[in-house]
Amino acid sequence: REYPTESCLEDTLETTADCNTFVCECEEPGSLRHGNAEVVSRCAGTASGDTCDPVAEGWGSPCAEGFEASGVFECQNGVFVQLPVCVEAGTEVVEMLALSWKIEMTIPDDASDEWWEQAQAVMVELAAERNRIDPSAVEVAASFGAAAGA
Image 1 (cartoon, helix red, strand yellow):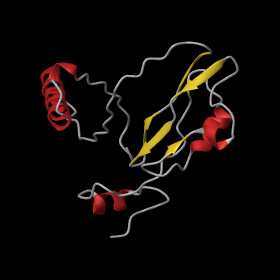
Image 2 (cartoon, helix red, strand yellow; image 1 turned 180 degrees about the horizontal axis):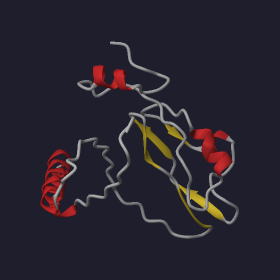
Image 3 (cartoon, helix red, strand yellow; image 1 turned 60 degrees about the vertical axis):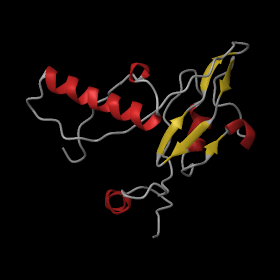
Image 4 (tube, one colour; image 1 turned 135 degrees about the vertical axis):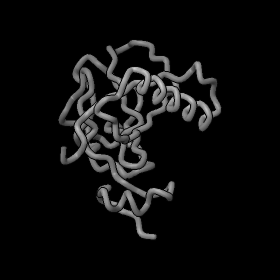
């Protein structure tokens, strides 16, 4: 199979959905709190499985003056799964494990609170099972946007 190297297009995702190794580069990572947007934007196009470290690349700090970066940008399957955090210089940073999933689903127009509770329970169960962790350690945060073309 051939895999995309420039971007993930809808038709490409459908044909490679059963393959865990398809390659999609990440788009611009967005803004960081106390970040330097000009430097951050240079990590756009990071390939899946790669990291982007602006300091190591010689582009400067992704953080505003008076702040320093902890961590790097890491891209997996077209999504930045790790972003640096800009902290005041000299601040001690404690790293924690976090998982990120992107789930696209059709939500019924009349979705009740019970429907949402059941959907969240399924997500928690899947995350715990696939990552071999206790379900009580899983938190679900959701963001909602309009569907493409809606």
